[in-house]
Length: 113
Image 1 (cartoon, one colour):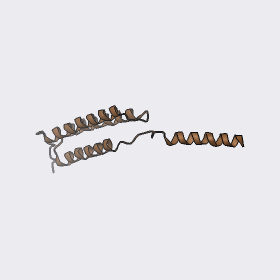
Image 2 (image 1 turned 45 degrees about the vertical axis):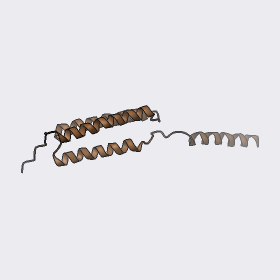
Image 3 (image 1 turned 90 degrees about the vertical axis):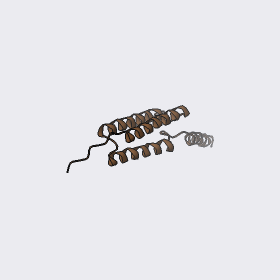
Image 4 (image 1 turned 45 degrees about the horizontal axis):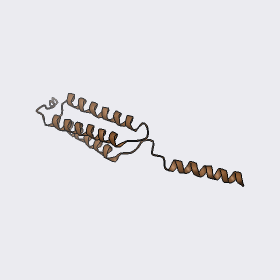
């Protein structure tokens, strides 16, 4: 009886500890949504001809760097307020870069027919 109670108590402690554990890769809907919208804006710029091939490559490289930084921040299973703030600042910078590239006078040359 005493052994059964000890096993039940140990199981309860383990289960309670797991229930309160943070997720391995925290989900941040605002960061993910912004990344998705920015990708859409880049694609729209490609289709409209507002972005040149080299501009698209630079913007995609910037996006890739932000995603790598996000993965590094989440590697410990936590995304701190400062890390989230840094990600949003990087996304702000990318957003400004997308706007600047789409509104400069450079245009993608039309394909020959």
